[in-house]
Image (tube, rainbow, N blue to C red; front, side, top):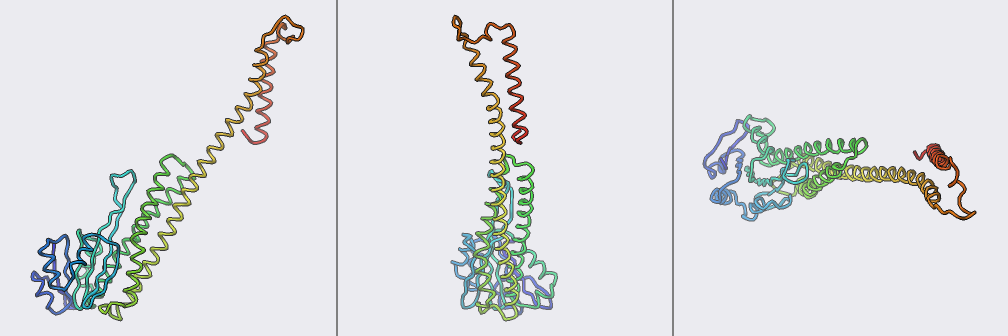
Length: 326
């Protein structure tokens, strides 16, 4: 079903097939809409006085926001989860927009796909959750938003685990694929930041009680939502700093590793250089002059030069080891 309707109060919840009849029934009316047809959406807009531009915002998935009208409030949020995608990154953020419209005695949730937060609140109404059914539509909107925020915390917990693994790998085994993992985490955090920053402003509007549809009793619950969103923003910024720090450590590790290799190559080249010089000098086989090298005519000249070169190499190697270069 794409459209489900229930009317609930302290005595229980009853399903309705007729939206107009449910709108006029006593209690709180909740219409859950998932991927509706155009005719269904038109009927819902006509019944509850929802402007077409509001539903278009949900369909287009614009940034999270709150809009206030004379007879209802419109909250647009996004449910997000990490899913393995077809890109080169390990995971990508999948977003599902959710529109929550609530007025005096009614609430409408509109989404292209089923969302976990709405499903949990809907089930709570079905089993007669005392806190939920005893309050109005504004509290139902709070429960949905609170569920969305809880899912964000779970999402960040997964990203935090990835950051811890990356930090350990940066120290123990900074391989080539590690930088790609770090960049993937930074992209995920950037996507989450893009969602929670405007959500903070939206939650602030509800926490201040700006909508007439938010009762004084419900304001404290929306203030709790606002506090959680602020905490989310702080966590995102902290994790971004940690990911950037892991990237810097990785780059520094590569630099240190490169320096170690260059140092060893320099030591090898330094040892070989005088040996090459000696070999080059004794490779000049001039004859017929009293100024030529006398070792050319010496029977032990060749082995003596080799032994001398070996001793020279050993002496330089011993010196470099004593200095800590080897």
